[in-house]
Image (cartoon, rainbow over all chains, first blue to last red; front, top):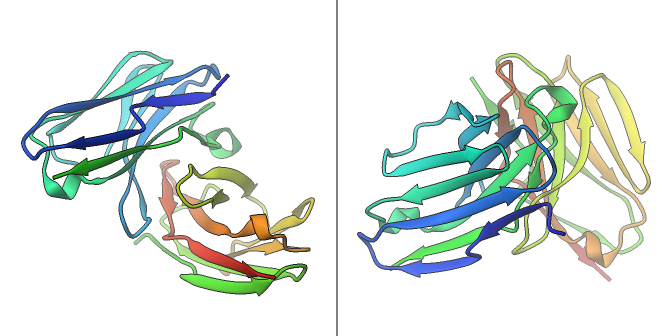
Length: 115
Length: 109
């Protein structure tokens, strides 16, 4: 069974469209994250939820909206897609946020291409 | 400020030893992580250091010096499958991870 699963794996869409990426973890972790990895391979945190509550909300455009219906799910919705949104988006989870409990388990990634 | 520096790329020979360095400057410190990322795949956890010294885990070891803001990942008996990017990440006082750009390690036969 996949520990952190995200769908879809690939997403190709036109500028201006709205799309969603779903993420689920079956590890019983309390914290979930969305990361963006651009072409230069930098991993940038976008959002983090702990027990369904938003704890990290980095400076991302408000076109990006996370939603956590329960602590096992964290979905990402993107409105009015732009070319610069093209990247790989990784979902991750950790047992907690502090110290060694912050070991991240990543999903396989969702490669978004905006044309 | 928050800054993580690691070499962009390194090349090593199969069977050899390689050391990948990472320096950090972060407001507050709550530990240093190393992750491995194969091309087209997700990062996977390798090590976590919060105290000074060397932690050994099979062929991989990780070292931390908090006073110098310095860590390294040591890979022994290199195998072709070790070709990957190695990401250094520092946890700041808010328990937020600050990531380096990664070091691409190329292993040659």
